[in-house]
Length: 519
Ligand code: SF4
Ligand code: SF4
Image (tube, rainbow, N blue to C red; front, side):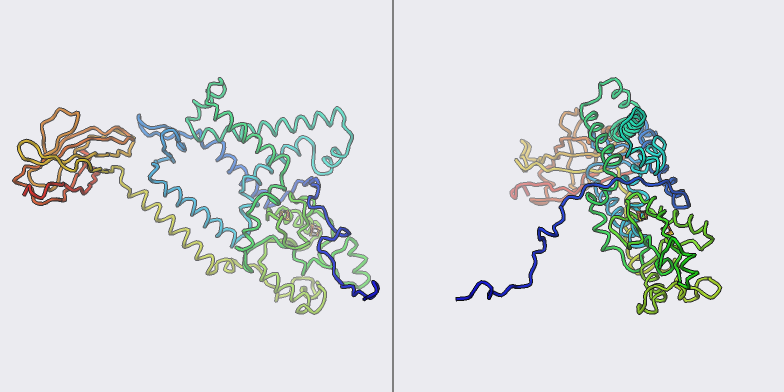
């Protein structure tokens, strides 16, 4: 038997050992982004104005479709199962157009991400746009970063209460406007706005406003960057779409390191120093609260505000812009290799500069052709092909359709004079918002004539009917053929409908059944 001291002790440690275990939930650290200024900030203002303008104003655009269709340019008319988009009207059976548009949006997102990284996240995603808007309000009321940090740390006072109430009130008003704008896409906006104000709108309208107000206020005002980091799946997915030639916001440590706040002293001591003066301006403006100098991070939405901040610092120092810049991984690697003598030494900025202080010739610089590569062309080709098919299909689609159901029970009836009669249900689809005079006629089936149930007209090979605008018209039709003209137990013939104005027509091939003995 072994003594307890003789039992071998293995070198092993639990991966979640109590000594080192981190809590699964880390409390949120508040972020107080500083106002940035520069070309990317300007561009973001522009995108923000356009996207918010489109969202809030679109339901109010009018489009004349005549007396029989709504005059709202963009309308999802769920009650009547129609989708209006300017001159295009989509019926439920044409939902493939919506599927096509969704495919284009998906492929377009792949295209953008593979070329310019998370441009969608940084500029056009609703979460980014609304957080930006909420930050504008916050800054206007509470001041820029330092003032907000001070206010947050200060004990509650009448001033702090006033500022906070003002901020949250405006946030709530923006949230209500956001939820309110959404419902206008589903009904005539002016009418619905009046109904909502009077309290006579459908309950679903108020519930929708309430839900969207709550989500906008919570996501845009309270949760902000946490939505991107923890809730949105897109940051995880897009990693697979980026490659070494995709543009991403990059800290060029090949020229920035070693960083120092006391570069003059270091230079005087003969040390080679990088361009980064460790001022943290790039961290202060980041709406995600991260430091791009730590390398690519999932949290980075590539809003490029750190580029603006750093460019401003470089301008003040009289150095070249672009210490933080949009760059491809392949260019970055090439320059890092140069700065580190092929990876054999720490970054030495002297290796990427000439004796005059300008950049060395061998440095890799971004070139547009780098982002136009096979992958980009495949995405662009797929996106364009789907778009062309959709456009062609919309421009050439029929707005008059015919469907026919043949009576199954009985398949035919033998009338007293020996002639055979078959019954059919004709479904005429007039897909334009105007009434149409339609002629229905028989093609083939010699000697046969039609009569319409409920219409007092003598049997004939054709008859006229009025198709209501934007409606399906159903007709019950009997076709009768004299016994001496019967040519088989199942004869094919055609129902034809034609707009009397001669613009469109549609046909349906049907079968006329007769007993074998009738011939
Ligand atoms: S690191 Fe730069 S690009 Fe990324 S989110 Fe922050 S500010 Fe925007
Ligand atoms: S803004 Fe530029 S110089 Fe300042 S810390 Fe960031 S990278 Fe360095």
